[in-house]
Image (cartoon, rainbow, N blue to C red; front, side):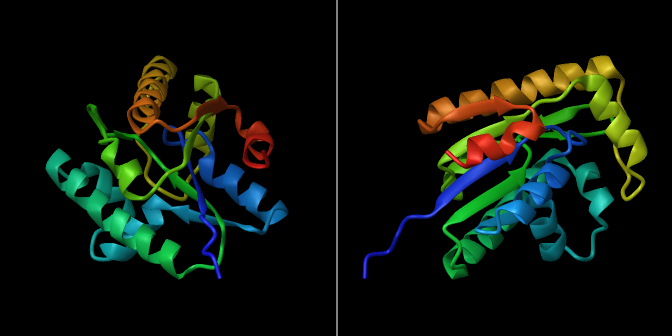
Length: 181
């Protein structure tokens, strides 16, 4: 029997854009997709560190932690029967006083086939962040959110060019159209 290749799509976006909610809604309507969250993989690998404290680590520690995500993701992909997989993650980590761009190699190390970046109005992202009391978020002004989102999109686009994979930008409600093509 021939092993069918899995389709692995990175759905990226800044913190608070609504990735997890959007992807969960998608997967509830399209159950042939597996949703893997980078944050949950990291929390499972480092249970001694509260999830909200992970962004406060040094830049070097955050980069090293990406290897934990890569290892956990690849183990799941090898063991699953799912042929369609969504990797829910970031290419930019918001910190209290700055941000960190993550290396493109993370995406190649998990075998990403395409990148979809979710874009939303900064005021909407701020509203989402303010209404989410489930975790400690970095709260920024609309202008800073706009700049970080632009940097995230530019970096994701650059990664797609380096990896020679498709790149698309979408509003969250249009994700199903891109994933079902």
